[in-house]
Length: 503
Ligand code: BES
Ligand code: ZN
Ligand code: ZN
Image 1 (tube, rainbow, N blue to C red):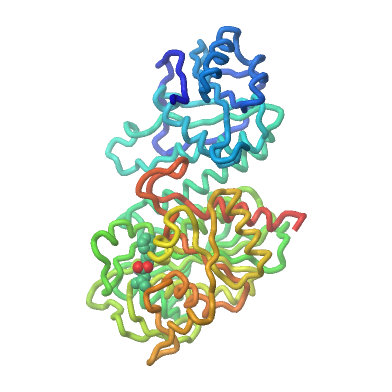
Image 2 (cartoon, rainbow, N blue to C red):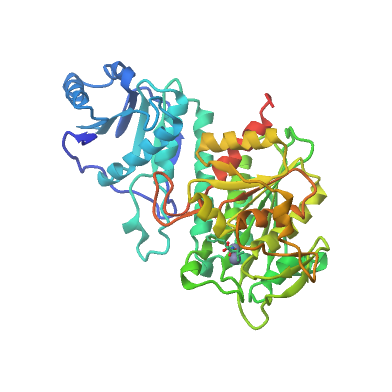
């Protein structure tokens, strides 16, 4: 059964999109009456609210379509196209925020078909939250990674501004959402940027630029400093690289911070993972520019926190390098001494993420964090377990913290599933020649990776293996293809709640 109806098409709107903008901005507009291209959002039991907004002819057409159970009707007007959309729940009778986001994403191709550059969203019977969620879905789905086409403008969709107005809408909430979408798209850009354009030095430079634009401070440790500190994990992974490693320290510390000790976020920044001498197969290597998605999430979360002035002290740590191969490469079977002093037998150089994260987790101890959360595209096992629908997570933080993070996961639809860190899994990491080895027996690889990381923590800690949801081969709703920016909305939601007075 068809779910949409068009009265008839219009093609008057002009195409106008600056090449530097690759997703739609969200703005608050002080206007009550629909004007220009307009989306009227309503729900099944609130369609009476449309009476004031539609002409008699439009209203009667809409009622006819409603009898046929259509969810969406489109009218041309002299001032622009008007979409009337009934939002309804997909799985449950109640309309969830995710349903609203997906409805936003569903509309985007139609706006682009009519080459619409600006659109206003009007409320005809929904809550502010539902309206914002629809807007979030529309804006996030408009993201494109087009800068490497020789004619990016030709590939660009038309939509670049979404206006929200109405008494239910707070201008601050609109600005907050715009900043959050911007942070997600920043993370997507970083993940999508191929290795040839984003090596470890370039990633660190990008962190500086983003820090300046967003208002968080950045310190970059270069190779000499990393050597002085004896970050043996990061240096070992970097051995075969022609590009030096970087260790990025990001910090957002507002005077209003509610926490006495910082929350530390740690992101795996492997800008490209060949596997090293334990070389990946071609099928495994093709997507490995995504191996800094954890770093991208941390950068995005700091950006959103700073732009929105969250009253919380957050530190971000990003160890960055590629995992390359040459005759100087780290060899399987070698033993390295980590920043913490622990020695590690490197059984497989493709299990490199845990080596660089371990040094960052040890570095985090100096902050005596209230909580540390690391994010990493760490294991294929996490993908095999949950696919791209959920984050595998585990850790030593209290149950209340885990509950709060899981709740943020449900709200943002960046959902988490907890796995155990039982002692027995750790036994697999015993080495005959060093304190630890970097690989378990093969089963439950995401857990043995977690056990390895746990060794380098002495504070409440959570590990998020985002290998599944960080990177999609094809778009899924408002999650555009390739880098999804997963983690940014989750962390922002979590940090905002953490800082809120009720907690
Ligand atoms: N970066 C990979 C994990 C990965 C795989 C991320 C696929 C995204 C998509 C990681 O460094 C890795 O290679 N892990 C290995 C570890 C193994 C050698 C123990 C894995 O999971 O296969
Ligand atoms: Zn690897
Ligand atoms: Zn990796």
